[in-house]
Image (cartoon, rainbow, N blue to C red; front, side, top):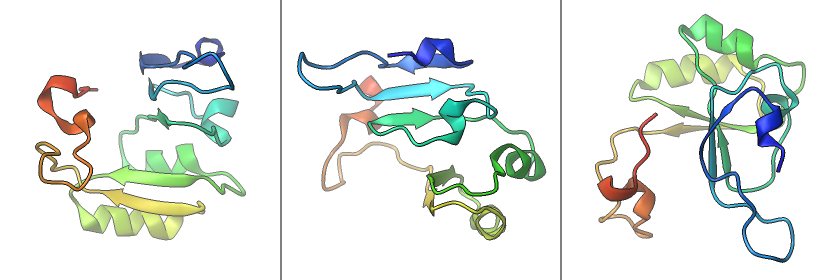
Length: 122
């Protein structure tokens, strides 16, 4: 796996899983440089790429490309911001991730990721 060759930090994962195929452990990459291939192209697998931004205009500039068919997740509690961004982005799909999850105990799948003992603070 060549994540280290890009300008980013591996928060968790980034390692091969199993001895067959090309599977990787769930991976979170932070501070991804938006000009790299990693930021611009789809990576198949359980990988989240985090790109930091200061303002809405900064976000739109960093994510603007002529054609971007990648899905995008916007994590905010502000529906107006999501609508503003979604109208200006040219991405394959845009999801609003509501960021008020305390734990996953009342969800259908009860993912340990949302529990305090396994959570990742970025």
